[in-house]
Image (cartoon, rainbow, N blue to C red; front, side, top):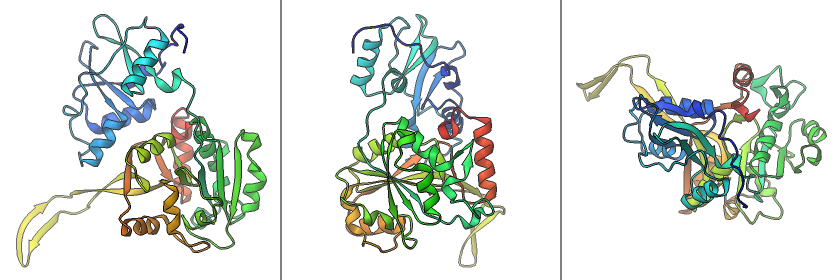
Length: 363
């Protein structure tokens, strides 16, 4: 890239600022508000102490760190920074060489005055990978909204949920889509057609009978030569599909599943026993688990575990891969996420889109 005047730093950079005493939960909330995938940790004089990135968060979540834990041991204290007068091509070279997506802008006293984001300094990478969206469900639990409308066409922020998914992926460089349809699939095909109105390419897999969340992939012809992204059509989220794909490739996985942490507090005190002896107590313990977020990346060979035309859900496919000693990995996500299965879920999605239109759903 030729030398030139540097673009202004992201105008929402100040939303990434957190004090040194913050918790992991506050960092995640900060990232979700700013959508910039970084937190800038500062002292009382606004001097940069260090950074915590989206990748740092995923690492400690996998390690089991609780959301209320201190960020003290997570802070990267030797973060790269740039002055405000550095030219754009030099900033990009620095970011590329160090494989970082964000870089703080500081003044002579190391006070934070801005933030440069790779995605905003460059055009998105072209993703030749196929993206398959499962859009064939009946949406029975979402009635009456789905009485005469396929679930993926139910609107959030004035657009069908499925359109939000496609537009978000398009902004990340994806352009080749396949929609697996069944219930009222003709309405989905009439709405999206070949994708021309969205400036993407759309093809269809038509299920004669419901085949689960993976079965329709057995009809992909020819089999993709690159890993493919698969998502349920009723999942609304700020996940970055490109980051998920890069994660899958980095760990050389046969299949990757996006997972989200779910916490549930027991309503009663728990008594631990060995036989009749009481050995301990826990007062309303919090149970933390990972749940399936309905977004995946599959390597082409993993499709060989599907039988054409046979029903198969994604967990079953993952189990088949594991039984063949093929690597399956979890991609821990913290972005806003909602599986729109019931009317109250739909209202949550619509409310979130109204209150934070620039982040949730990317609308």
